[in-house]
Image (cartoon, rainbow, N blue to C red; front, side):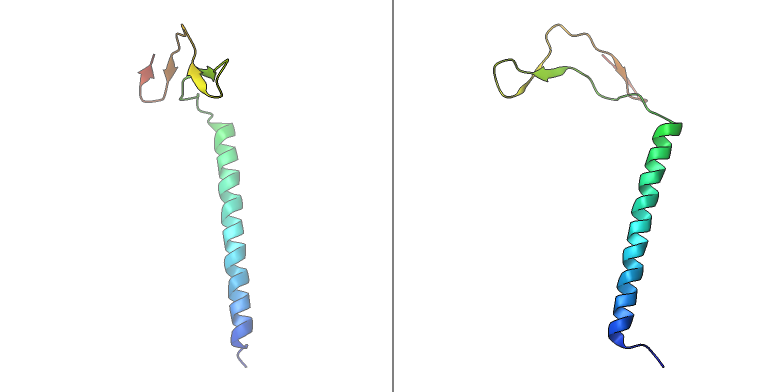
Length: 75
């Protein structure tokens, strides 16, 4: 006997859902392991600060910052 189409659809939906959850968990674990095993230095400048009077960000005055992105060295 073959299962009813409705039960087949429910089983397929369950399989797809479990597969997606498994993939998401594996990707999250891989990301955590990668960050623990091979951490990367920050590739951005810490040159912004909150503006003292306005509700926005501004450049920090007189800042000399250097960072290495893995490909280039920025100052």
